[in-house]
Amino acid sequence: MNQFTTLEIETSYNICTIWLNRPDVRNAFNDVMINELIAAFKQEGLRTNVRAIVLRGKGKVFCAGADLNWMRDTAKYSYDQNYEESMLLAECFRTIYKCPKPTLAIVHGAAMGGANGLLAACDFAFCEADTSFSFSEVKIGIVPATIAPYIIKRIGEYPSRQLMLTGQRIKGSDAETLRLVNKCFKDIHETEAHLQATIQLLLTSAPKAISLCKEMIARIVNELSEEEIPDYTAKMITETRASEEGQEGMAAFLEKRKPNWIE
Image (cartoon, rainbow, N blue to C red; front, side, top):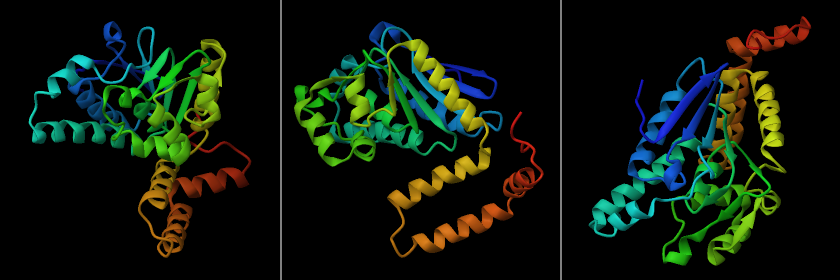
């Protein structure tokens, strides 16, 4: 198992929690954390005993975005070095987005700049009402480029223009209205209760079917042409009907019992 220095990983009852663990710098990410996030999501995404992955932050905030000391160092890089590190960050968001397991971000305190890419790449994002969100890149003369694909998927073009061009700070209720998060709650207790309720719903669904469903949605949205979609979806339902999970699920329904993936 990988040993991480910027993350803490816990697994309990088939749920893996990946904690951003740099609370002294408000969980700001640097090249080390980016590499570790890629490794962690790939590692946990392949574990057969993991049914869902929760992303959280230690300390007072979820994530303050990029570590400014690291950003300052990159100013000294060549174009090729800067490009390589930017590609690494893009790969981090892509790895989370394409993770075969359901992913849930629990956001508290603040999500600044690139932190929004982490939560937007997850399947679900929940926050507390007093959480602050900001796309502050334009305030320091840069662009929220690598997070943009996932933000635009979540909230659409014109809300993205509003947040990215102004760099304005919004709170949890506005983030919910804009659909940057799925749901905003008044405090941590309500957030935790909803997280557990969502996890319980996920645990009643077939694990391989969930992974295939995630893959299907991503391919329909990102890859397939209108002409390719009917053939792809017909093959998907044909194959899943004949699969071990599909046969077990239909048998369980007809026999009025729980399928074998429900403990």
